[in-house]
Image (cartoon, rainbow, N blue to C red; front, side):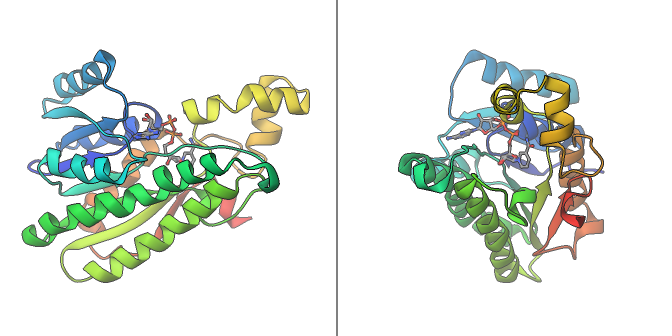
Length: 257
Ligand code: NAD
Protein backbone atom coordinates (compact mmCIF):
# COMPACT_ATOMS: atom_id res chain seq x y z
CA UNK A 1 0.00 0.00 0.00
CA UNK A 2 1.55 3.25 -1.13
CA UNK A 3 0.35 6.43 0.53
CA UNK A 4 3.41 8.43 -0.51
CA UNK A 5 2.47 12.03 -1.25
CA UNK A 6 -0.68 11.89 0.91
CA UNK A 7 -0.97 13.95 4.09
CA UNK A 8 -3.02 12.50 6.96
CA UNK A 9 -4.33 14.35 10.01
CA UNK A 10 -5.30 12.07 12.90
CA UNK A 11 -7.06 13.83 15.78
CA UNK A 12 -6.35 12.60 19.31
CA UNK A 13 -3.29 10.62 18.25
CA UNK A 14 -0.78 10.82 21.08
CA UNK A 15 -2.18 7.59 22.57
CA UNK A 16 -4.31 4.50 21.97
CA UNK A 17 -6.17 3.94 18.70
CA UNK A 18 -5.17 7.30 17.21
CA UNK A 19 -1.50 6.53 17.71
CA UNK A 20 -1.99 3.04 16.21
CA UNK A 21 -3.74 4.59 13.19
CA UNK A 22 -1.00 7.21 12.80
CA UNK A 23 1.67 4.52 12.91
CA UNK A 24 -0.03 2.37 10.25
CA UNK A 25 -0.46 5.41 7.99
CA UNK A 26 3.22 6.35 8.43
CA UNK A 27 4.19 2.74 7.70
CA UNK A 28 2.15 2.96 4.47
CA UNK A 29 4.17 6.04 3.47
CA UNK A 30 1.82 8.91 4.35
CA UNK A 31 2.93 12.18 5.88
CA UNK A 32 1.22 12.27 9.29
CA UNK A 33 0.08 15.10 11.54
CA UNK A 34 -0.41 13.97 15.13
CA UNK A 35 -2.69 15.92 17.47
CA UNK A 36 -3.90 16.27 21.01
CA UNK A 37 -4.76 19.08 23.41
CA UNK A 38 -1.39 18.98 25.20
CA UNK A 39 1.95 20.43 24.08
CA UNK A 40 4.51 18.35 25.96
CA UNK A 41 7.97 17.33 24.81
CA UNK A 42 6.70 13.70 24.78
CA UNK A 43 4.11 14.66 22.14
CA UNK A 44 6.83 16.00 19.82
CA UNK A 45 9.08 13.03 20.66
CA UNK A 46 6.34 10.68 19.41
CA UNK A 47 6.32 12.50 16.08
CA UNK A 48 10.11 12.23 15.84
CA UNK A 49 10.02 8.53 16.76
CA UNK A 50 7.50 7.75 13.97
CA UNK A 51 9.38 9.93 11.46
CA UNK A 52 12.69 8.15 12.18
CA UNK A 53 11.09 4.69 12.18
CA UNK A 54 9.21 5.03 8.87
CA UNK A 55 11.26 7.77 7.14
CA UNK A 56 8.22 9.94 6.49
CA UNK A 57 7.38 13.47 7.64
CA UNK A 58 5.52 13.43 10.97
CA UNK A 59 4.62 16.54 12.96
CA UNK A 60 2.61 17.23 16.11
CA UNK A 61 0.07 20.05 16.34
CA UNK A 62 -1.70 21.00 19.55
CA UNK A 63 -5.43 21.70 19.20
CA UNK A 64 -8.27 21.15 21.65
CA UNK A 65 -11.00 19.21 19.85
CA UNK A 66 -13.62 20.49 22.31
CA UNK A 67 -13.24 23.94 20.71
CA UNK A 68 -14.61 24.51 17.20
CA UNK A 69 -12.14 27.25 16.27
CA UNK A 70 -9.17 25.04 17.27
CA UNK A 71 -10.56 22.11 15.22
CA UNK A 72 -10.73 24.35 12.16
CA UNK A 73 -7.31 25.90 12.85
CA UNK A 74 -5.75 22.40 13.08
CA UNK A 75 -6.63 21.61 9.46
CA UNK A 76 -5.45 25.05 8.30
CA UNK A 77 -2.16 24.71 10.24
CA UNK A 78 -1.60 21.25 8.72
CA UNK A 79 -1.91 22.84 5.25
CA UNK A 80 -5.02 20.76 4.55
CA UNK A 81 -5.06 16.98 4.32
CA UNK A 82 -5.82 14.13 1.92
CA UNK A 83 -6.76 11.76 4.74
CA UNK A 84 -8.68 12.96 7.79
CA UNK A 85 -9.14 10.55 10.68
CA UNK A 86 -11.51 11.92 13.32
CA UNK A 87 -10.50 9.86 16.32
CA UNK A 88 -10.35 12.10 19.42
CA UNK A 89 -12.79 10.84 22.01
CA UNK A 90 -13.54 10.61 25.71
CA UNK A 91 -15.93 8.56 27.83
CA UNK A 92 -18.01 9.17 30.94
CA UNK A 93 -20.38 6.70 32.58
CA UNK A 94 -23.41 7.67 34.69
CA UNK A 95 -27.17 7.10 34.90
CA UNK A 96 -28.85 9.80 32.80
CA UNK A 97 -30.54 11.52 35.77
CA UNK A 98 -27.14 12.22 37.34
CA UNK A 99 -25.21 12.70 34.10
CA UNK A 100 -23.30 16.00 34.59
CA UNK A 101 -24.35 18.54 31.95
CA UNK A 102 -20.75 19.64 31.40
CA UNK A 103 -19.72 16.02 30.71
CA UNK A 104 -22.56 15.67 28.16
CA UNK A 105 -21.45 18.88 26.43
CA UNK A 106 -17.79 17.87 26.46
CA UNK A 107 -18.44 14.40 25.00
CA UNK A 108 -20.71 15.73 22.25
CA UNK A 109 -18.11 18.43 21.44
CA UNK A 110 -15.06 16.14 21.31
CA UNK A 111 -16.61 12.89 19.99
CA UNK A 112 -19.01 14.45 17.44
CA UNK A 113 -18.88 18.20 16.80
CA UNK A 114 -15.09 18.22 16.27
CA UNK A 115 -15.57 15.98 13.21
CA UNK A 116 -18.10 18.45 11.77
CA UNK A 117 -15.54 21.27 12.06
CA UNK A 118 -12.49 19.39 10.74
CA UNK A 119 -14.43 17.83 7.86
CA UNK A 120 -15.98 21.16 6.86
CA UNK A 121 -12.50 22.67 6.46
CA UNK A 122 -10.71 19.62 5.00
CA UNK A 123 -13.14 18.95 2.14
CA UNK A 124 -12.16 21.99 0.01
CA UNK A 125 -8.63 20.66 -0.59
CA UNK A 126 -9.88 17.11 -1.18
CA UNK A 127 -12.37 18.35 -3.79
CA UNK A 128 -9.65 20.42 -5.49
CA UNK A 129 -7.39 17.32 -5.68
CA UNK A 130 -10.21 14.96 -6.67
CA UNK A 131 -9.18 12.54 -3.91
CA UNK A 132 -9.84 12.33 -0.21
CA UNK A 133 -10.65 10.05 2.68
CA UNK A 134 -12.64 11.04 5.76
CA UNK A 135 -12.57 8.23 8.31
CA UNK A 136 -14.45 8.59 11.56
CA UNK A 137 -13.59 6.36 14.50
CA UNK A 138 -17.06 5.61 15.84
CA UNK A 139 -17.66 2.53 18.02
CA UNK A 140 -19.88 -0.53 18.41
CA UNK A 141 -21.76 2.08 20.44
CA UNK A 142 -22.47 3.86 17.13
CA UNK A 143 -24.68 0.89 16.24
CA UNK A 144 -25.92 -0.42 19.61
CA UNK A 145 -26.37 1.05 23.08
CA UNK A 146 -25.32 0.26 26.64
CA UNK A 147 -26.82 1.72 29.78
CA UNK A 148 -25.11 4.66 31.52
CA UNK A 149 -23.31 5.86 28.38
CA UNK A 150 -25.95 8.34 27.14
CA UNK A 151 -23.59 10.99 25.77
CA UNK A 152 -21.10 8.52 24.28
CA UNK A 153 -23.79 6.44 22.55
CA UNK A 154 -25.55 9.57 21.27
CA UNK A 155 -22.27 11.02 19.93
CA UNK A 156 -21.24 7.75 18.28
CA UNK A 157 -24.65 7.25 16.62
CA UNK A 158 -24.34 10.89 15.54
CA UNK A 159 -20.97 10.38 13.89
CA UNK A 160 -22.30 7.39 11.94
CA UNK A 161 -25.04 9.70 10.59
CA UNK A 162 -22.52 12.45 9.85
CA UNK A 163 -20.38 9.94 7.92
CA UNK A 164 -23.34 8.97 5.71
CA UNK A 165 -24.20 12.62 5.02
CA UNK A 166 -20.62 13.54 4.07
CA UNK A 167 -20.49 10.45 1.83
CA UNK A 168 -23.58 11.64 -0.05
CA UNK A 169 -22.24 15.19 -0.41
CA UNK A 170 -18.93 13.92 -1.88
CA UNK A 171 -20.08 10.86 -3.87
CA UNK A 172 -18.44 10.48 -7.27
CA UNK A 173 -15.76 13.07 -6.50
CA UNK A 174 -12.95 10.70 -5.52
CA UNK A 175 -13.74 11.27 -1.86
CA UNK A 176 -15.13 8.67 0.53
CA UNK A 177 -16.36 8.97 4.10
CA UNK A 178 -16.88 6.03 6.41
CA UNK A 179 -17.07 5.15 10.08
CA UNK A 180 -15.05 2.37 11.72
CA UNK A 181 -16.86 0.79 14.67
CA UNK A 182 -14.41 -0.89 17.05
CA UNK A 183 -15.48 -3.11 19.90
CA UNK A 184 -13.24 -3.03 22.98
CA UNK A 185 -9.62 -2.13 22.28
CA UNK A 186 -7.25 -2.18 25.28
CA UNK A 187 -6.16 1.49 25.29
CA UNK A 188 -5.73 4.00 28.15
CA UNK A 189 -9.45 4.92 27.74
CA UNK A 190 -10.46 1.30 28.47
CA UNK A 191 -7.67 0.60 30.98
CA UNK A 192 -9.02 3.49 33.10
CA UNK A 193 -12.41 1.73 33.39
CA UNK A 194 -10.99 -1.53 34.79
CA UNK A 195 -10.32 -0.54 38.46
CA UNK A 196 -13.84 0.92 38.82
CA UNK A 197 -15.41 -2.21 37.28
CA UNK A 198 -13.32 -4.42 39.62
CA UNK A 199 -14.69 -2.44 42.58
CA UNK A 200 -18.32 -2.45 41.38
CA UNK A 201 -18.35 -6.19 40.61
CA UNK A 202 -15.94 -7.35 43.35
CA UNK A 203 -13.91 -9.22 40.73
CA UNK A 204 -10.23 -9.51 39.86
CA UNK A 205 -8.81 -7.90 36.73
CA UNK A 206 -8.92 -11.00 34.49
CA UNK A 207 -12.51 -11.85 35.47
CA UNK A 208 -13.70 -8.26 34.89
CA UNK A 209 -12.08 -8.25 31.45
CA UNK A 210 -13.53 -11.64 30.43
CA UNK A 211 -16.95 -11.64 32.09
CA UNK A 212 -17.86 -7.93 32.16
CA UNK A 213 -16.00 -5.93 29.54
CA UNK A 214 -15.79 -8.59 26.83
CA UNK A 215 -19.18 -10.15 27.68
CA UNK A 216 -20.72 -8.69 24.51
CA UNK A 217 -17.62 -9.31 22.36
CA UNK A 218 -18.09 -12.98 21.36
CA UNK A 219 -14.41 -13.48 20.45
CA UNK A 220 -13.64 -12.61 24.12
CA UNK A 221 -10.54 -10.89 22.73
CA UNK A 222 -9.70 -7.20 22.52
CA UNK A 223 -9.27 -5.69 19.07
CA UNK A 224 -5.92 -3.90 18.67
CA UNK A 225 -5.04 -0.33 17.69
CA UNK A 226 -2.95 -1.85 14.88
CA UNK A 227 -6.03 -3.62 13.50
CA UNK A 228 -7.99 -0.35 13.51
CA UNK A 229 -5.01 1.28 11.75
CA UNK A 230 -5.00 -1.52 9.18
CA UNK A 231 -8.69 -0.90 8.50
CA UNK A 232 -7.93 2.80 7.96
CA UNK A 233 -5.15 1.89 5.49
CA UNK A 234 -7.59 -0.40 3.63
CA UNK A 235 -10.11 2.46 3.37
CA UNK A 236 -7.32 4.61 1.85
CA UNK A 237 -6.53 1.95 -0.78
CA UNK A 238 -7.99 1.78 -4.30
CA UNK A 239 -9.84 -1.41 -3.24
CA UNK A 240 -12.09 0.85 -1.14
CA UNK A 241 -12.80 3.50 -3.80
CA UNK A 242 -16.48 2.49 -3.84
CA UNK A 243 -16.78 1.94 -0.09
CA UNK A 244 -18.50 5.07 1.17
CA UNK A 245 -21.25 6.06 3.58
CA UNK A 246 -20.98 2.85 5.54
CA UNK A 247 -19.66 1.38 8.77
CA UNK A 248 -16.98 -1.27 9.22
CA UNK A 249 -17.18 -3.15 12.50
CA UNK A 250 -13.97 -4.42 14.11
CA UNK A 251 -15.66 -5.81 17.19
CA UNK A 252 -15.08 -9.57 17.52
CA UNK A 253 -18.74 -10.21 16.63
CA UNK A 254 -20.37 -7.77 19.12
CA UNK A 255 -22.90 -6.36 16.64
CA UNK A 256 -23.74 -9.81 15.22
CA UNK A 257 -25.37 -10.79 18.52
P1 NAD B 1 -7.37 7.15 24.45
O1 NAD B 1 -7.82 7.81 25.71
O2 NAD B 1 -6.20 6.25 24.47
O3 NAD B 1 -7.12 8.23 23.32
C1 NAD B 1 -7.96 9.33 23.14
C2 NAD B 1 -7.16 10.36 22.38
O4 NAD B 1 -7.97 11.53 22.26
C3 NAD B 1 -5.89 10.76 23.12
O5 NAD B 1 -4.86 10.98 22.18
C4 NAD B 1 -6.30 12.06 23.79
O6 NAD B 1 -5.20 12.91 24.03
C5 NAD B 1 -7.22 12.63 22.74
N1 NAD B 1 -8.10 13.66 23.23
C6 NAD B 1 -8.94 13.63 24.30
N2 NAD B 1 -9.52 14.82 24.47
C7 NAD B 1 -9.06 15.62 23.48
C8 NAD B 1 -9.28 16.97 23.12
N3 NAD B 1 -10.10 17.76 23.83
N4 NAD B 1 -8.62 17.46 22.04
C9 NAD B 1 -7.76 16.70 21.33
N5 NAD B 1 -7.51 15.41 21.64
C10 NAD B 1 -8.15 14.89 22.69
O7 NAD B 1 -8.67 6.42 23.89
P2 NAD B 1 -8.87 5.38 22.70
O8 NAD B 1 -9.47 4.17 23.28
O9 NAD B 1 -7.66 5.26 21.87
O10 NAD B 1 -10.03 6.13 21.89
C11 NAD B 1 -9.84 6.70 20.62
C12 NAD B 1 -11.16 6.73 19.87
O11 NAD B 1 -11.60 5.39 19.67
C13 NAD B 1 -12.28 7.45 20.64
O12 NAD B 1 -13.07 8.18 19.73
C14 NAD B 1 -13.06 6.29 21.23
O13 NAD B 1 -14.39 6.64 21.47
C15 NAD B 1 -12.93 5.27 20.12
N6 NAD B 1 -13.20 3.89 20.55
C16 NAD B 1 -12.41 3.31 21.49
C17 NAD B 1 -12.69 1.99 21.85
C18 NAD B 1 -11.86 1.25 22.86
O14 NAD B 1 -12.26 0.17 23.28
N7 NAD B 1 -10.71 1.74 23.25
C19 NAD B 1 -13.76 1.31 21.27
C20 NAD B 1 -14.53 1.95 20.33
C21 NAD B 1 -14.23 3.24 19.96
